[in-house]
Image 1: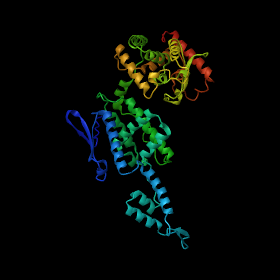
Image 2: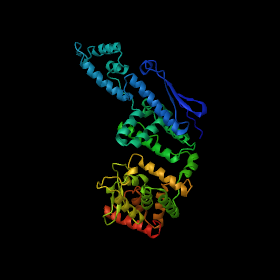
Image 3: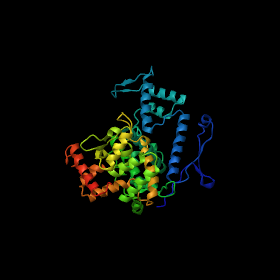
Image 4: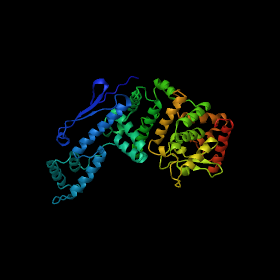
Length: 459
């Protein structure tokens, strides 16, 4: 799948270095005081280069818009602004009132729009405003991918900075493939565009020159699918278009890559070896505690690093962790909200962590070092450095612990529904009713983890 993407305004320098160099429009040059936006690029290849190129293109557009006194609105947003401004301006024109045409039985413009349009033209007003005055019956521009992006940002992402950065990155890929999103009508989006974006994203390389993980591309395409979907629904376009990103399969050529990306469960002896490595190597016990809770609960990294003290419930019939969105982090899915029992070493670790938190404020993060944006990534990277000391298998990662827990639950004969309750997987229709209330769910999942412990798998 040899797909090459040519990045506009990028020059090749000696030693493989890249330079972004784009000429400013003539009317902007006197204002910005230079002829080009010229920047030595940090990245040299792969997705990092594409991301940096997208950021520089956006910076160029921003500088031009500021110099021209323009706002960064989509065509449709600008149209709506112009319509309202035209109404206001027309209402201020006096001496040329509308006249009633008795033959037609309607009020007709007495010349206000024509006079105002000519005055605006003479004053150098923007053409879109002049058009709104002269032709008030014109239809608004079609909704674009940029309109869908802004709506998705508002409705689904909000103030979530990591997700916002991810959306910017993905939309950068779209802009490099389709052109400016503000110029691409949603209704023009076809299946061939979805495939071309998929192939372009699969062709990108990471900083180390290796192919991007197929799973990463799938996640990013899911974001595009959701963005296009919300635009189609909320702009009332569902009866006029399908979502080209629905059921978009990966090419057969990626099956080998997908198999390479899969993770293996971690054997018990390797988990213990990692624990010993952390005890010997780390001055702080934070990473060790995170590792023990990950291996003893099967939780995701962010679910553990983002815990607050009041989400560790120890004075209870079934000591447990409360996994829910909080001030530190959100959750992956709705089914991720759950209560996970604490057994054996995980219980001992939770008690130690709460005791060592030294805070009367229950809203205090349990792990201060990683209670921040992308804190889970920081913890993951720190743990991986130690994990590579005890295993060089590329299919062994921190996330392998969830696969280990899944296997242990199977070995212990735990039903699938109870496995999903513990791991935060989708429950299906019966999940909310099979065991009644929260205490009943806690009791059955507690018994499930005790079965795993009895097999010596949580030691």
